[in-house]
Length: 302
Image (cartoon, rainbow, N blue to C red):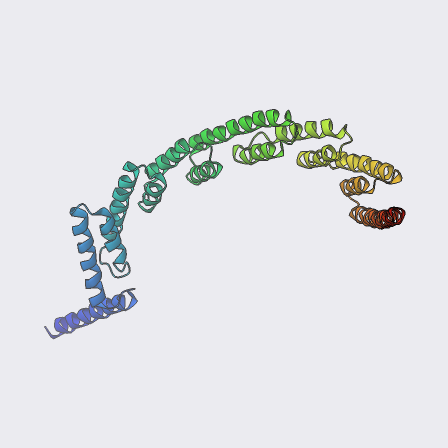
């Protein structure tokens, strides 16, 4: 009898020590905080039952997650409330906001639907399409990813068609359209070779001309095409033209060609010489004018 009593006391002591150790290891060591957290969860659930999803989510967020007794219940409540708010935003066609709430609710299907809605609403916005692609890549949804990359490729085609029209204009400057095509191609993961080929074609056409604007544009097209050898040939052509105009005394034009050729030092020097020469000529003109005016006044007896 005495032995049994001692054994029961030992077991009780072990249980007490174990429970004390477990409570000491808890992230919420104060029972009062645990009670407050549980009460906050109940308050949030009351708001949910009242149809106040946004307020319910806010109240659930205020509950100390480390002190809530039933964390699964707490987590489920937040997800339900977030999904309900997402549904409200979706009804208002506020798809970006709805996406954010569905993400909080960890409702992948709903979040994906919002990404598709966003693309349908603003199909020409590259940032919207980019974000949608990134989302489906993270979700490893190859079907949706493929569809959106095809969407981006259609924009590459559209930009190249616009580039064709722009190059046919007076300016022959379609670099903006080529840049837009390249931006879309990075999301399409296709079309880059066509863009480079188009840029090289434009450079070839302009490199045949001798105008300063044409040669400057040719350099930009060749740069976009990734053809440094052809850029070098254009600079050599510009250098030859610079020397020709300099020999004819047309310094301003020569300076521009030197700049195109990549010789900024020579361009600055020629420009400076031209300005000095023009200033000297202007001073000489003024002296001549003053002398002629004096001779005329003398002749008229003024």
